[in-house]
Image 1: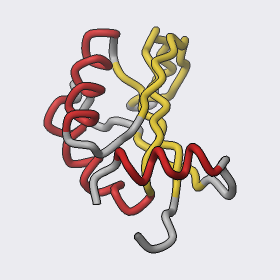
Image 2: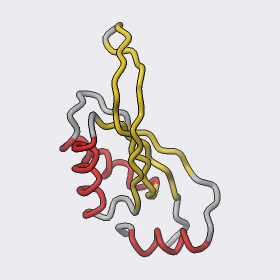
Image 3: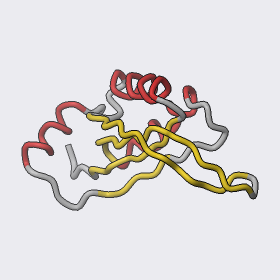
Length: 107
């Protein structure tokens, strides 16, 4: 495999049930190798109004080049009209993690 562009993906979900459904889909399709689920409290602007909601933040280990496929799968299962999916590149990881991601993620 050529140089792998390892990234962390972040996604907010409406609740634990939605977070688990999306997690299972992405893992089964080998688009992500690991997902951490963290309860969060969000404050945000929506249609000019300030909103406050409890959500679940997914932090996912994957490759940057899988972004479009990940986004497409999330769109099939997410309840929000406009969900927030962002990715951050990772500059360095331990050799063991690199090998694990190479073995587990879709080629």
